[in-house]
Image (cartoon, rainbow, N blue to C red; front, side, top):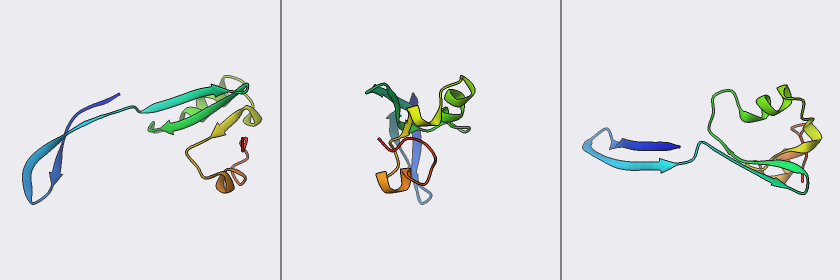
Length: 75
């Protein structure tokens, strides 16, 4: 989770609340759908290192046309 406060802009001293997830992963139709990945290295790399093949991982945060170029599953 990302939780905290961040500065609104450089000309204003106020802050706004920040709250959200770093990683959102779903398992759909026997595939891992990465909906959001805010990690430095990328959660897909961890899945590959764990032995999960690219055809079982969908980079859902990309448009389907871009997914075709990644080498990972499209759907």
